Amino acid sequence: MPRTSLLSQARDLWTDIASTDVAFPSTGLTVVTSPTSKMCPPGWMGLVILGEAAIATAPDDENAERARKVLANLSIAQLRSDKGVAQALTPTAVLGPTALAYLTADDFRPADSAALAAGQTIEELPADHEDLRALERLCSRRDTDEAGIDKITSPVFVIREADESNEVIAASGHTSWPRNTAHLSVLTAPSARGRGLARATASAAVAHALAAGMLPQWRARVPESLSVARALGFSELGTQIRVQLDS
Image (cartoon, rainbow, N blue to C red; front, side, top):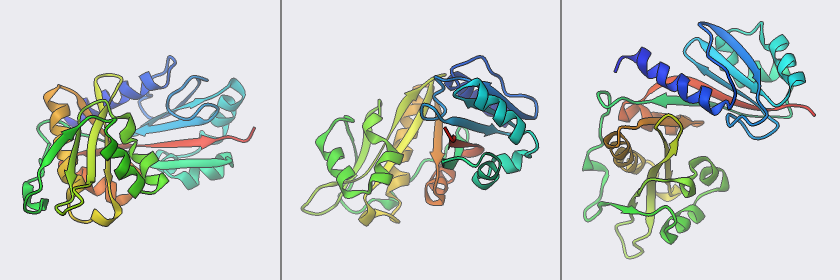
């Protein structure tokens, strides 16, 4: 699939998530009012840049007009930066920037089994399995919120520690999003990071999504997460920023 087609699919996804009639312009930014936008928490402004174009949703007309005025002079590069947006809007809080990456079947680079220790295999669990809650308890609240493995709608692909504990130390799956998109989730226990387990479990989740004809999406706020995505063949196409506006 050409990169332009992948970009078009990603844009179609985010216009659906905006929950109002909006389209990405050829270049620059379009701001619309959408109090029910899923691009951000309720009452916030959501901004998504894909390629050289961006859309933003505001919770009301007043904030939409404000965003149009103060963001109009920012370049796409400045819109991708949380500092550029923060300086323009002086928000209460900013979440992001979060990288948005997508994958085609032709670009997929599956992980090999070299990361697995002797006796380790990848197994499947349902998202409500208690062993996954135990994994979450090993991780920080920030990490568990970011991963969202409790929201996974696919099987969860896991690796267990190769010792007597047999505890789950890495997990990945995907959540069904609009436009037949598979939103990837990955979580690894702090003590097990740096061993290639995130890539191994995510590879299984991506293969499952592609077999179902879905578009895999990866969102990453930290470089380590994005490096895993790139290793699997994901292309970074855009950025998401969520802004809590002054009331």
